[in-house]
Image 1 (tube, rainbow, N blue to C red):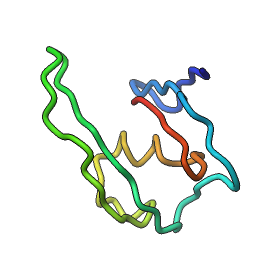
Image 2: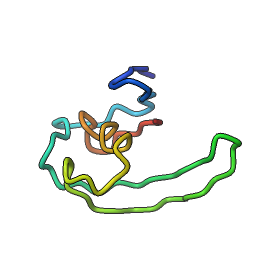
Image 3: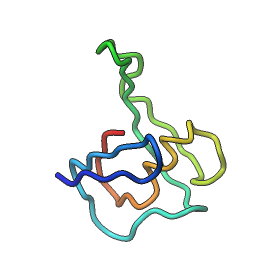
Image 4: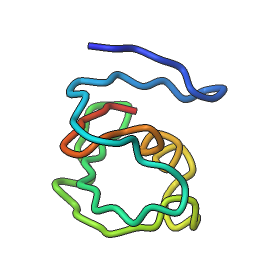
Length: 77
């Protein structure tokens, strides 16, 4: 597992690296999101959405986390 800090306050844990080229701004990707509150309650489960990276359609921290990922990769933000 790779731990990294990509921007102030955003920490990533790369659980699965994935394969192929890294995602960059302008790429259209399909993401599956799961969300939890800090208390541990799950608020979102397996939400799938197609987005263009850099279009500001996601929470900024999630968008930063997608940059550099690869196909079938998995990260915790």
